[in-house]
Length: 135
Image (cartoon, rainbow, N blue to C red; front, top):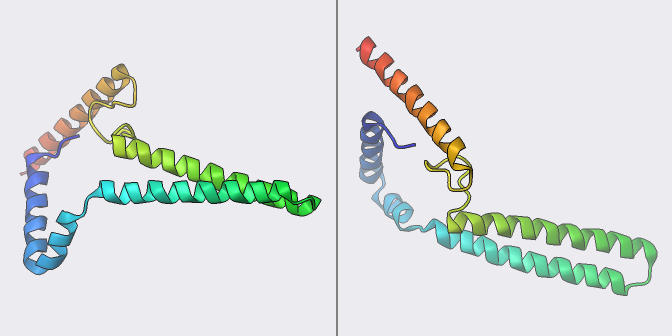
């Protein structure tokens, strides 16, 4: 949902104040690419997945029953966690994970996102009128 004019002005004022207060921090925040962070998380997930696979294989190779079960479960859980986390990060990189945050709702059915967007537009318009009436 796009920001209203008032919200955009407030955001610009906050950004200007940040640049004036701490220009070094502001430049660091601007130069940081979220995709780099997500790619790093995908790589870590791949490493954790491989470690989980290694733990699972070691558990299978050992012939001690309680240790085999524990290592098997631990390896499986590591692989599952890494796969789910990596898949979520890959969706975020590709832009498919909207979670209802972006207009258009590429991940949801179009009829539902249009209804939701129009509802939100109506609510926003009512809110704007309410504040204009008070001023």
